[in-house]
Length: 85
Image: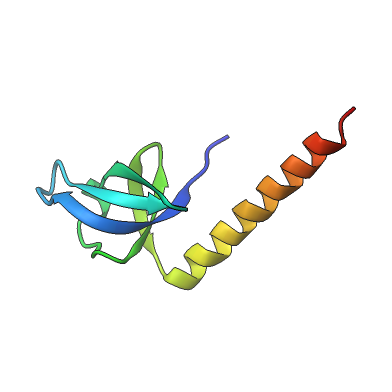
């Protein structure tokens, strides 16, 4: 399954258009992400990241909605695991 997860840009590491990278935060965890597709993103913007590559910029409300749904799915999965004998 392919999954794009929103994260918040914390810091640009390299703004070269071909090798652009930034540190992006996902629920308290920071990862270095390739940013060549979203070189116009600014610190504080949310980007959707798939396989370590930011593929688009999203507004904060859309990012929070997606993160809320992912959290809800995680809780459902944990509840299902807890119910198994």
